[in-house]
Image (cartoon, rainbow over all chains, first blue to last red; front, side, top):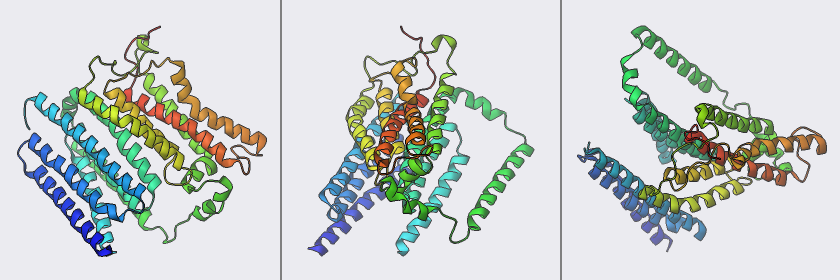
Length: 97
Length: 315
C-alpha cells in the first residue's frame, strides 16, 4: 500500500515536472506572445495540478490535502486571469512582439 | 540531503542571476518585473532558512506591495524615460558609482563571512520568556512584546508616508478621492478575479493574523493580504477609493499606532512599565493591539498605492 502510494507520487510529480519543462521550453522557443502564453498556462494548469495530485497521498491530514487543492485552484484563477489580461494587452497593441 | 544542498546552491545562483538581470534591464518596467521575481525567490530562500514569518513578509511587502508601487511609478515615468536615457552620466561618475557599489558589496560580504560561527544571539532569552507572553510564535513576541516601541513607531512611519503621498495633491483636490472613479462597466476579467478572490483573501488574511500568535503569520502579513484584496477590488474598478477627508478613513489610518500607544501608556500605569503588559493578561492585550494594527495596515498600503487625491472633494 505504502509502495503503491509512493509510486503514484513519483509518477504524478514526474509528469508534473515534465509539463513545467515543456512550458518553459515553449516560453523560450515559441515565436509570439500569444503562443508563449499558451505554453505557460499549460505549466500552471497541468504541471501544478499533477504535482499537487502527487503530493496528496503524502499530506499529513485531510485538511492539509484540502489546502494543497485550494492552492492549485487559486493559482488556476490567478493564471487564467493574468493570461487573459496579457492576451488582451497584446491584441490592443496590434503586434505580437 | 545532497539533493537539498544542490537545490539551495541553485536557488542562490538564481537569486544572483535575477539580481544582475534587474540591474542591467533596459527600461523601468522590465527592471520592476525582475525585482518582483527577485523578491519571490528571496522568500523561498527565507523558507529554506526556516524563517517562514520573514518569507511571508518578503512575499507580501517586499515583492507584492513594493512591486505594485514600482510598477505604478514606472507607468507614470514612461514618457520621461527616453529623455532620462539621453542624459547619461559621464564616464568618470559612472566609474565612481560602480566602484562605490562594489566596495559596499565587498564590505557587506566581508562582514557576513567574518562572523563567528556562533553569532551573538538573543534567541535563547526570547524563547525563555515566551510563556510569559502567552504566545507560541517567538517572532510575534519579539514584535509586539519585547520591542513593542519599535513596532509602534514603524506603524507611525507608515501613517507619515500616507501623509507625504497625500501632500502631493493640488490644493483644489485636497480631501478628495485618489485613483480612478468607479466604472459603470468594470474591466470584466479583473472584476471576475476580484469577485472570487476578495472573499477568500479576506478569510485568509484574518486567518494569518489570528494564527500569528502561535504559528508563522501575524498582523503585518495578514494586514498586507487584506490590503491586497482592497487594491484588487479598486483596480477592477468595482469600487473607488474613499475621499481622503472621510473621517472613518483617517480614524482607521491612526487606529493601530493610537491603540498601541494607549496600551503602552496603560502598561506604565497598571503593569509598572511603559509598554509592559499585565502578567497573565498579556496575550489578550497583544491580540487587541494587533487587531487594530491589521486595520491600519490594510488601509495604509492601498492608500500608498492609489496615490495623492486626484478629484475635487464632494460635500
